[in-house]
Length: 174
Image 1: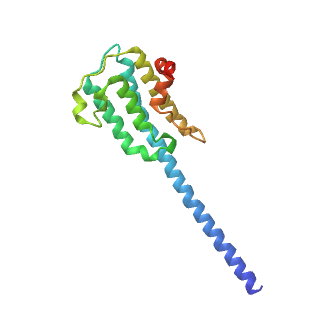
Image 2: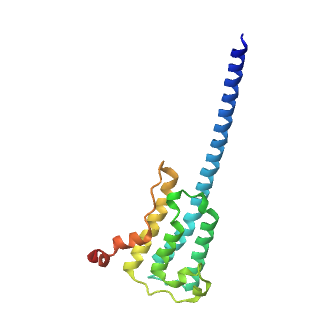
Image 3: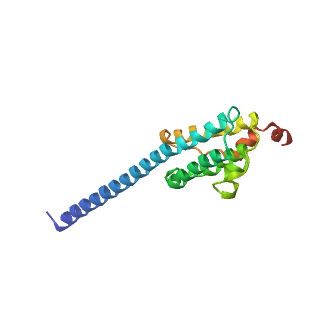
């Protein structure tokens, strides 16, 4: 066996070891990211379901401004803890859910941004806007669930765009 053959064998072995180590490291990182994504969805869905329930039940039993503020706080807290684990295509989730809730309930839903809004009265329930906000929340929840099982996550439609597409007044003007 020549010196060149020995060197070639050692080089091949070293490159194989480096490749295996790199692959194992990236697999571990991908597993941690996947586990964090699953945990984020597991924590976000109940908070979003609570918001959706408030919207859904509001025409039968109007919630208090405090109940809306507390539900929004809970959602915002979960978002702050887990937003980094979501795919980039879902990066607007917190802002868009906040917009959907604020669109229907009014300024007390924005108490997580400005604490002085906590005591503001809720907007008068309107079945039309209730439906738009509730269906957006359902869409966002479904999109979040699908992000766990689809290979490529599609970008979340922003609430402002959703609202424009649902608003017949906006469609007649454009």
